[in-house]
Length: 294
Image 1 (spheres, rainbow, N blue to C red):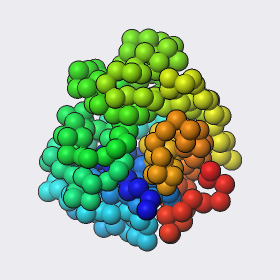
Image 2: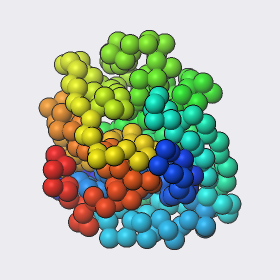
Image 3: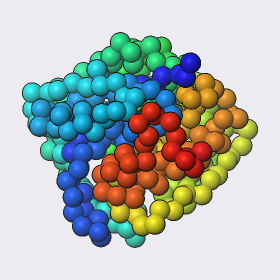
Image 4: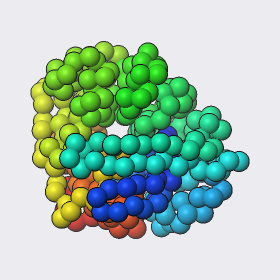
């Protein structure tokens, strides 16, 4: 039986501006991850949204192998992220947020999530990541973070990272966590600490790399016809990666190359439209990979 995957993360409304326009969409780290991972394995989603978006999320995941019993509907409105993307530097040139109901969530996992073989701690307050981690019996744990959390809670971010098997970060986040500007050295310096045995480095237009004690596997990005909105690309990559591990029922280095390729395909789908439209369109109703995903 295919391993099941659990994710703890955010469920947000995204107000995104790129050179292609401005759109308000439904997103969040748990949402992008779950859409990608559900191509390969059943997913249990955990997060909070407001009543203003709960119906839209149920419709978004309708027909997919995504269990929403861990979705909490808060008393306040859904968190809104405002961001303007710079397509020259591939970072946000400005961003702000309306916190909404996010602080109401205690990171309590659903029963199915606690039993899942794979857990992903999506980009989220590190204290909530640790709370979710302590409830899980997963054999394979992945984690993500952001530089803002590293600045606020460096000890907790590092603790979560070293209690995970795989860490998904971009080059800037790796540098912030380790103090080492070279991503190869930064990733290698973390291996062997705690239970951490692989670091997946997301590198935007340059693709991604998986760093283990056995070496570094680099894969180029799958170029979409046109980059519309880079929001959620890293979450989608992590979803494809861990989804492939779950489908193969393996967590060894040998499966990581295929997992990395699948993750990059999911990331390419994520950036091909505003919000999750292209990623959702590439997800088959039975949760299997779309043609060419692996």
